Image (cartoon, rainbow, N blue to C red; front, side, top):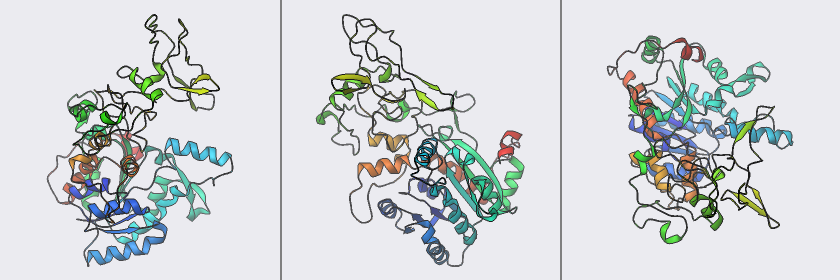
Length: 444
């Protein structure tokens, strides 16, 4: 089966597409350094680097040449989510208030060239991946003098009644990924086999293989399952922060203050809740950190969390800022400087995964953050043959690796989705599930 990939980044998500049996003929990625990683790992795919608005015709021309008269089956597109995600939208609103940005984030308009390429390519199926907030994102509707329209409604309107759709917020831990990562997967198709299966079952998604409680399914894969076997590291000094023989199993050093906070943080706790370590006191009832929703519905961290022990007055090992010889509590949520849990999937890996202040990214018991190698395991990249190299021979920096992981989807989860579609298209017998309830059908 033939496919093309848009917004391909370094090709991590494409591992799932490739291993499900799709031949990715052409790919597009805006940033050259990411495209170079893709080209090294997929030398038989024509990578077109550059702005998709400007490269539309080139993508279509190269696709037609690669097809050599054969039909295209699928377009896989993962437009950037920064204009849609909770954090991205918050930053955008602040910028608008300051007069620094237009009200509409241009990244949200990338669905337009995506649909133009898809319709012109003749492919029968479009698979889109984005954050769950995509369903609540609005853009100007060019066919109605710029009147605002939801992106999902715009897609349906643009494709027309010939296409059916199956849309779901997927928790990738439910597909055996040792990481909690929710994404909106939207499948639009005009292929009769897929439409018939959708009509019979109400969904084009495979059944979950795992669940949080493990009832009737396998239990979620945990951090312990994934990385507990790896050699220990410690971020206090260079000699202990890097393993000699395991590539990328290394961590950045923590400065003296950060190491002090982290080293006094118990299992499954955050440094903002650390208690007194004075051996003459050890008072453990100091108020802990938290957050609350204000009158505007915005979640804000508490500003009254104490930094000094209520019993002995000693400085607590909580994240602080020192100004003019005075200490104050660092601004931050309870998830900052917090240890991961051994017995749960990892929280979503972001491009800040190597920072202790990132959400739940301190090792479950060692005094450090995740190593890049551990992140690769938790993201299921190590399940595949993938090389951290560039086609132009330049070095792949740790920063680029973090970005590629943080902005991609765990390929093992995507592979299950694409395998399911491939099985339907190839007439492989699948158990016919009872039609889903109205809850999913209303959204679909």
